[in-house]
Each structure stands twice: as C-alpha cells, then as structure tokens.
Length: 128
Image 1 (cartoon, rainbow, N blue to C red):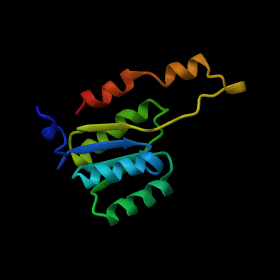
Image 2: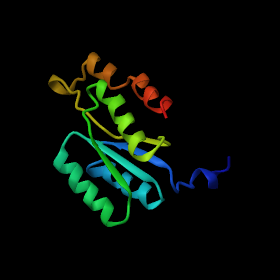
Image 3: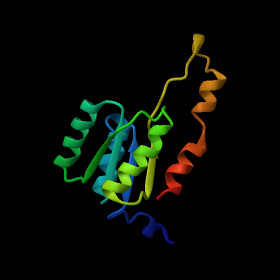
C-alpha cells in the first residue's frame, strides 16, 4: 500500500479517546475534515455535547460515548457502541490521559504500569 492510499480516509471510522477538548478535539476535527466518521469519548457529558456541536457545525459525522477508560470494563462498551453506531474501527487515537504523579513529582510504579498496558487497546482493535 502506498503512502497516498494511507492518507485516503474517506469513510473510515476513527475513535479519539479524550476527544472532547484540547488536542483530542483538534484531532477529531482534522480526521473529520479528511472524511472520517468520528467517535469521541470522554468522561464529561457536557463537554462531549459541546464538542459534538462544534464538530457537526463543520460537517463532521460524530458519535459521542461517555466513558472513563481508567475503568477497564468501559473499553469494551466503547468499542461495542462505536461499532454499532459507525461501523468497524479503522483508526484509534489514544488521547485520554490520567495523572499519575506522586509526592515531589514522582510517579508510582503502579501508576506507570497501569498507563502502559497495551493489551487493553489490542483488545479494542482486534474486535473490529
């Protein structure tokens, strides 16, 4: 597959975690502009509503999913809702963040380990 084909995104389904504001919202807008159907997830319903309104104003097809991805059972729910609403997932932008800082700016081993569990997201992509 050539580079030009890789950038043909019309009709693809993109999931952006942490997509209600900041870089996540900008990524959703950019992918939508390139023709993707976009699903954004975040914890706050009101921020998702504002983000959806903003994206729809510029013509992006968007689905919102309220989800706290620190809760591992929310991952499968996110996947199922997106597949049901938009179709199989082609692109994942894992932008959801958490703060793992400890006293004096130290990061706990548990926090570091939890933030780097790729099997959580392999499950997401293998189901599509």
